Image (cartoon, rainbow, N blue to C red; front, side, top):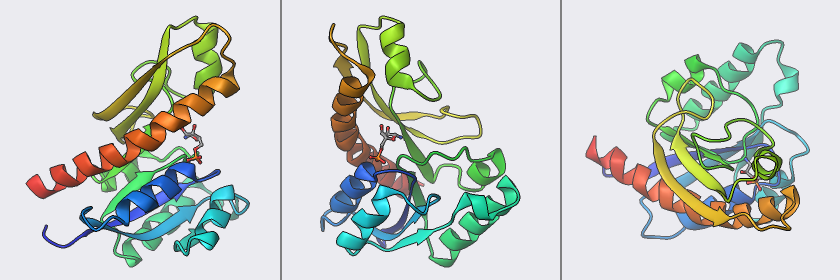
Length: 195
Ligand code: GRF
């Protein structure tokens, strides 16, 4: 694949990972173009980030759809109509079914705020503290049908401090996420070119 890969970014929240990726993709030496971002939440903070930075953003509110399948059908249609070739789930808080992920197998990556395979699911920071873990961090991985499974691209690790709270831990992990995701995207783009 010689042309720049057309990227779509999915987000649900503040969009700091989306914004970080947008900045990275804008570098001329990154063989990708950011074509579209999609939020499933109409009040996501990341929408404002897109408006302030002229990043294309579409809202597909999952609450507008009777079923998960109908929401995903619209999501898939929007991505394909935009010519998207690769998806980054950047703080996207909707579980995607195996049908959707299967249709994008090898072309969709996700960031998870924990050192997978440990601490899959939600509230990872508090769970890490409750488990008295010495380390924590984030993982960028290929998505596959089962939640938070899939081959790992990048992990970044931090020490858990004695006085850490879920909030202080989340803030330090987020800094690592902003390093890990661009690194992982570069690796995934290289892998695409090997196909
Ligand atoms: C981050 O902790 C990320 O790991 C999780 O959502 C949080 C906010 O991410 N998925 P962002 O600022 O919306 O990228």
